[in-house]
Amino acid sequence: MTDLGDMDPEAFRREAHRVADWIADYFAGIERYPVLSRVSPGDVRASLPPDAPADGEPFETILADFERTLLPGITHWNHPGFFAYFAISGSGPGVLAEFMSAALNVQAMLWRTSPAATELEEVALDWLRRLLDLPHAFDGVIYDTASVSTLHALAAAREQAVPDVSARGLAGRFDIPPLRVYCSEHAHSSVDKAVMLLGLGQESLHRIEADAEFRMRPDALAAAIDSDTRNGCQPIAVVATVGTTSTTSVDPVGAIAAICEREHLWLHVDAAYAGVAALVPEHRWILKDAGAADSLVVNPHKWLFTPFDLSAFFCRRMDVVRAAFSLTPDYLTTAEAGSARNLMDTGIQLGRRFRALKLWAVLRYFGTDGIRARLREHMRLAALFAGWVDASPQFERAAPVPFSVVCFRLSGTDEMNERLLARLNATGEVFLSHTRLGGRYTLRLAIGNLRTTERHIARAWTLLQQHAAELGATP
Ligand SMILES: Cc1ncc(COP(=O)(O)O)c(C=O)c1O
Image (cartoon, rainbow, N blue to C red; front, side):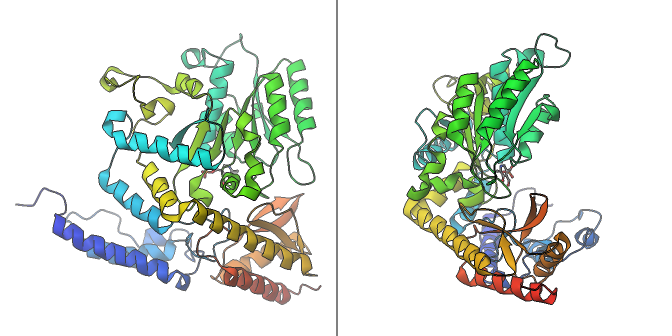
């Protein structure tokens, strides 16, 4: 008869060693892969059978097929030449903790469904809060992404503005005016998605003009709030960004917080990428005024070496989040409710992964001084690269470099820059992405990977110059 149990422990031990060896070799030899996958749409799918196998297969075969059919379709985010979007690292200690978390298969929905998962989440987030120098009043919870953190922040803002919204919703209501949310023209698209999902409609989001350095203009914010109020709308929230997606600019949080306080608006700070830079004393100023906010998000899965996914949401009004999301059916009642925290009460998800384990492992393994040193080094490399751009007659810088991202372009047409980027990424040695600033196609070099060294950025710079010359760029 077929064995109806799981993989036996000895087979697991053997296969776990095989996978661990594979991962260690992968990390050690990562530069042999092209950073950006070269497959075409449909290639991976075409190499896989249409049906799952009826008979089980050895794990060794599965691993071999993974290498043969899936690996060519992987874009290597762990590659030191990965400079696109926000570069990240699934660090060794984070990967190991993720492995342990998968083995435990914990659902931390209630305290009792794994007390350690709930309490470690509180401890790891409190460590992070203290490192970011945020006030004690901020309570934390882990979600998967910053998009979901911002969704919860704006759900809380909606709850605060319309306390019966959970019961009555928004549709067809004539007792409440149109609600308005504000963010800068450079804020991330997750803010749009949140207002769409919360039933406010994308038109409720007022994108405020930025200054020449891509920061939200507080005077324009105040004017927009004033004008909307005079037109019968009800402003409910502002999202300030510390480290915008395109240029990593920092909105003037202090001035924005003062407006929010005056107008009684929820202030959410999106520090998804740059927030961790506040660990470094000379960058502490970036979150200096964020203590006045109602909520803040920072993503350890972006620049804190924690494997995707882990977003830390901090809120000084967790009671409002709870009012928006807490709902306990009979089958989820427990004796500890009230004395211990049930994480299902502070979010949309019921079942939740044991994510805190990897954050805890990363903070302990590298230590706070080790993390600071790595963040500093990334910012040093970005400044070095920016210096090369500034000194070059062919290239021009497109934005200030407050952290580890450099926005620049080849002096010339958009089309030339697009072609340059395509050629560069086709080398397989580096992967950069682009944005549009002031209407112009702009290249971005984002540093955030633990394996990236001066050699890698120097190589990116050499390739840029070579391909620019081949495209006929003249100084
Ligand atoms: C400033 C900012 N906020 C939010 C997000 C969304 O992050 P996530 O992928 O965690 O939802 C990003 C993504 O890059 C971002 O740059």
